[in-house]
Image (cartoon, rainbow, N blue to C red; front, side, top):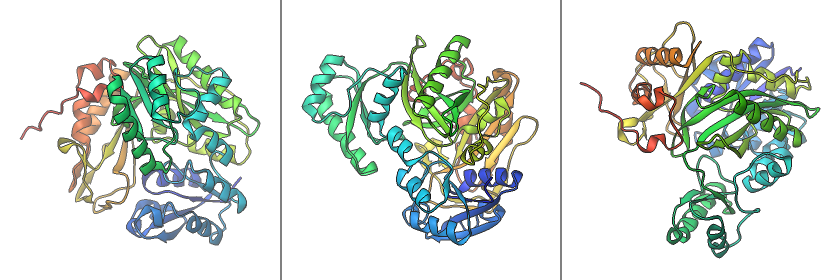
Length: 449
């Protein structure tokens, strides 16, 4: 087992990893930018190293600084969390070259699954259902027009190196394709330095349901059931739940088997997520694979009583998994609390938190790095907390979430708490009747004075 792990991340996920390290009697090293000097992950780690100024390009994305921090503290492993360098193949290889274990996928695996077009072909070869689409990359807009005519509209243009909804455009009619092709490529080039594109048939009324998997060094994998991530705004998840209210026993079995088949086909090692689109008839199609821990991992931990970070560390240390698949025993919902103003197009709201009161009680979990007096920097993602509730049933979980949101008080900055509170009252959400298009028709009601 590792003696010391450096966490190459910040905020709540860094603190989350530190907690598991302590429980496993592993020393932890926090890294931080000058903007995060007062963050809780810096305070609670055994050691902390400043790796640069506020811009992430000069700190959390500066590979040489992170490797240097690991070497001067004698860390024998690095956990990247999510975001930043978690799915960067160059960083994974750099860790390997320096004799430091990267707690995540190998460089080869990241490259293989990170390129969306390559991942599609790999999953097709594995026998996992994929969305009908182009065979590999599309070279020209003329090729895109011809393929769209053949597939029939609507179609979805996607950046091969994309993520977070960047470089994606839905095309409903032929006359819009050229304009949207150019826009998608420009956005992909700006965000990823790569404007390679491919095309898929647009799945209408889809659910976004993902399967959590774990694989070990022997090529054996298991799944830990599903999460429904369909409540999204501009392809960014807002809230998630496990199990999915759309799931059936037969569908869970099929999707779980497909996810395990995908992981074992590529001999995947570590924690990962196989993401699917599920249509209204419960046909499911591979969308992408995330080769890291997910933001929403706590709801899986809650419904099966399982520490995913601990399992990540064990697998990285060479410990074999049990091979057992897990089924949800409870119901859990996560609301991402962002420092954003939901009444002003979710505009970021950095600044100083003047008052903070977090909810408690049975079945309530808060993952956060903020506190009263903490200043939220404008340099990073706006998520400041995750509120997770767990209950025997979905109905009870919604009731518990409403109560917890009412208790959650954050003053000094705007947050998404009012949005989540209204979401929990929405009749379609309460009925479990929602798709990835839910937010297009959602109307936030003004707060009562």
